Image (cartoon, rainbow, N blue to C red):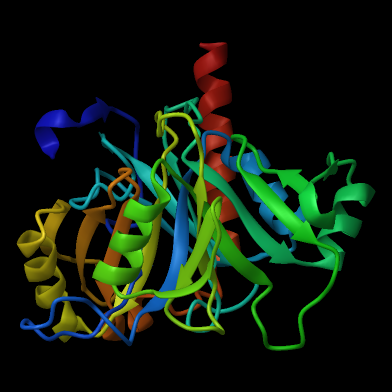
Length: 326
């Protein structure tokens, strides 16, 4: 991946190296023809150009908490931060711990000031009365959406479809992630028949799949135009028992589908190493499968996460201001 990466030089201090993406977990059996059971939906990865405003949206508007923040001095071996070989950061935010909630990974590449939004990501649906109250109190635009949902737009143009109701205590407000499909039948065959996600809903315009009823689902939405992932494309992540990862590799190869990053172990100084494989579905949507056991160790809530994020936002603002004045 290094040969296709973009190198951006930025001063760095206290940086470490790690990985980000949307990931699923699966069980292993090299002889099976489809994957079934054991997957866990983890997070969706967004590239963000304005870390300050993005932080405000997720914390002050949606009401999510900073779960952990990590700084990296060079590009991720699994292209977690996109095709950039430069300093970057990863911030995990959510309504609760990663063990029990579908969360959001915010990837910030230093000195990348804009990403072009395509039509591949359609939106995330969640239930929250407080998010709509927060938006109105903070003057954040609230648009009227379909089916009684309200639409909040995050910096970068990413849509959130908010249902004006709360979930019972302990349940995850995040309901689903919606991605575009150029051919619904082909998408269903890949996600349901090959990867083994259960089919919860299907009509001529969309299909909803997932590993379990209580988890956040993946909605595949049929669109009539070609899929354009542009430069803001994201990634969905799932975890599976680590022993299952080689079977995923074998299965995808047997069916001649795309593997973007073969099985690789990513070291994280001071934290658990994780093994991942990165796939692409027929429309090019990136999928990360990570070993569940190590990921649960890596993804523990860091009580200093909020302080770390705020510290690096401040340092970045000071650096930018200094560059502009010089």
